[in-house]
Amino acid sequence: GDIKYIKYGEKRPRLFHISHSTNININNIYFKDSPYWTCYLDSIKNAEISYTNISARRSNRDYHDLKNLAAFNTDGFDVSGTNIYIHDCEIWNDDDCICS
Image 1 (cartoon, rainbow, N blue to C red):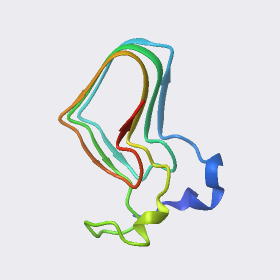
Image 2: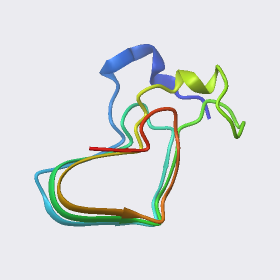
Image 3: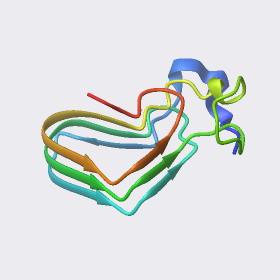
């Protein structure tokens, strides 16, 4: 799928954002074609993310080509906080898969 927000540069919305929360459990979710950071957890305490897939592709190719390189800053999981556990996830994007 084509990501429509690319033309907005850094002013794109995040797909999923939770801030200043505790005891978060995210599982069995499929995030597709995020315009910017896909799953942004900010100042979180005690979170587990499991069996969750992220796909931010501009084509159906299973490799990075010039078209897919245009899906910039589509971080997979961008997290900050304490005691955050991410496991059994698949991430296909063109930037950080997991960052903090």
